[in-house]
Image (cartoon, rainbow, N blue to C red; front, side):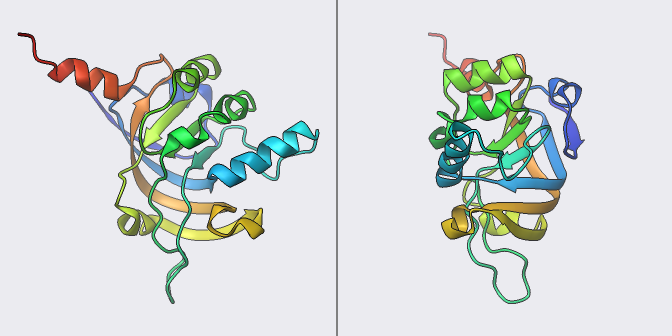
Amino acid sequence: MPKDVRLSPPLTAADVCALEIGDRVLVSGVIYTARDAAHRRLMELLAAGRPLPVDLKGQILYYVGPSPARPGRVIGAAGPTTATRMDVYTPTLLKLGLKAMIGKGRRSPEVIAALKEYQAVYLGATGGAGALISQCIKAAEVVAFEDLGPEAIHRLVVEDLPTIVINDCAGRDLYDEGLKQYARTA
């Protein structure tokens, strides 16, 4: 039976391993954004033996490229980006201590195996709800790669950002379980 959970990073292995697919998670606190271009830059830094601009240990990465803020707002629309584009980079970041990611869509078998190996989870946010999700963001600032514009790494302070566990530490996949649950048996 899915449960309602509140999480605030930095997260521990115990925090994320207590989650199961289908659990509804409200995230509050500081999270970081990163999309394709930022991930490529992070990999370049690692290849060069240089430190990352953000310590990812226990953190949550939100796959989002927010639009510019309207006057009086801290951020524009901030809906999730398709996570598969980050799959090639994700196992490396999980090995560094990243504990959760927020995006939309499926993850590769390699990422699901890495979630199990490094005790982390993948959380889904609702695609097409960027304006609604932006209301959960209370502060935003660019902390790295400003030249990438919306793909820069932002530090967000969020309150009750609604997500759901898509892949858990046991290697389970909510999409696969849903297909099995509703499959017709002729």
